[in-house]
Length: 444
Image (tube, rainbow, N blue to C red; front, side, top):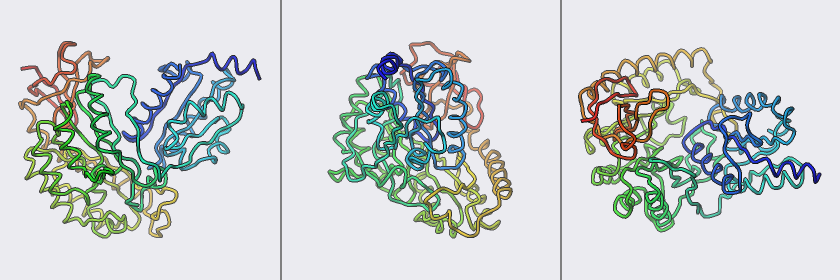
């Protein structure tokens, strides 16, 4: 045991593989920082590592399969390096818990969504006790007091403002994997973001499963949070995701317009379906017409703002007529971007037990039709950017094209020929050509 511990203590390279949403990306950054603070070194390839951590989403079935597949691919690395430790974290870990260790004998530990800060302790237990570890206890009653941990935040970074969800949409496993909703105190967020600006951060994206239901222990809602960040920090740009339509109100829109110099005019507003019965079965809390009214309110009160959305096709009970309602919604609301998925049955959710499941081939056909229609509409929507001047916060130089790249206020990815001094600056670029999600511009 002494020889093994001695050898393991000298091996300090780690690799993290991340699937899923921005929350998972942010969690991976946090785990990287925790490991680096305790002497570990991040490496770009799993073959170079002594610790492999798979941080995965479970909102759909496919990422769960990816975890099983990826762990299996590391069998040869385990054979080469008997001291290699492999762990799974994120929503898959929280959902599957000790079952993962039974299903995947190569695994050494499972780390739940509330156990991220325990990662160094878990590794110490593995080293000293030489056994598998499962750490998945949720801390639903504890205050949500964390500080953003990131080694190199760069120009733009994510900041968690809340975690968990109380909505219990019938298709979503998040309340069971991330727990009930908890918000960070307003004063902590102001201090956190101001600290990031001192490290060179120019833009933050506020994260939460349902970001606009934020409620600070002091009583401040999401609108007041945005106002305080605009007034009391030096951050230049503020974005947020993901918002829930039922919590999107006029106060929030007015705040966005009032502080438009800092709050970006891009809103991700997931609709999920354009049919009232499906929305009710999903437990979304709004009707088709209520959603459309809110979308129009945003476009009217914040002129020039851009909308994107999430859509699920093939939800249990979705008839052809119901799907046509979703298709027709694209004619009503000008989404410049959509994220569309086939319904995937998830453990613990109510929709898993619904009787009228849609055939897989029907779901695939509807997804193709939806994406084809949006692609046709989106080209006409983004045509307005050609020849326009967009204010782009330059983030980095692309290693392949050598072009510089950043995001406009409308969340458009813009490439251009620049110089290294442009990084971190807001540069006006005239758009020369573009496609649906990417633009190419020239400095004025």
